[in-house]
Amino acid sequence: MPDTGGVPETSTPVERPPRPRPCPCLSGNPYSECCGRFHRGEALAPTAEALMRSRYAAFAVGEPDYLLATWHPRTRPEALELDADARWLRLEIVRTAQGGPFDTEGVVEFIAYSRSGGATSQQHEVSRFVRLDRRWLYLDAV
Image 1: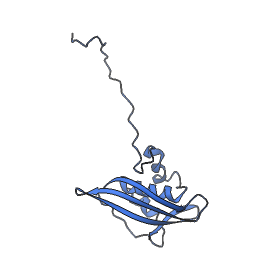
Image 2: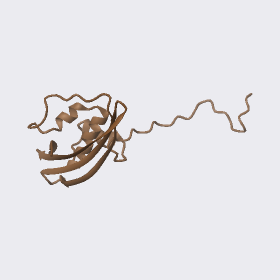
Image 3: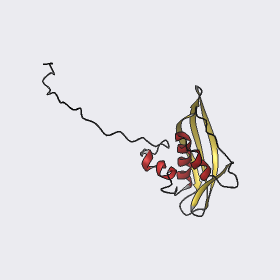
Image 4: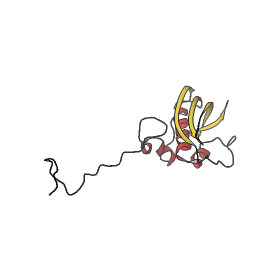
């Protein structure tokens, strides 16, 4: 009989439930309860910042359909191909102006950090958002 150091042997290992995947938007919440519910169409982003975070997360998890669906029809491209090599590392919200639950326009300034082909880069953008029919949409960058 093997020496177990005084610890009784168990025939079945204790299985721990898998840890929920954290949301790429860095909210601290699980993806399924955060931006995942927007991506699945279970909820609408209540603010311009929430939409910005969910769009960043869509880039990170590869959801081009969500990106197109949340883009204003006047400025939306016909198609969107994501860079399969890009790994999105971090989102930093610099500032927001308006874009609350009762506003119709909002601005979110952010820096998104990514790595592709061994090189790290950052995208610093001031994005404009509008709310149409209770839905926030990305309009453009200024």
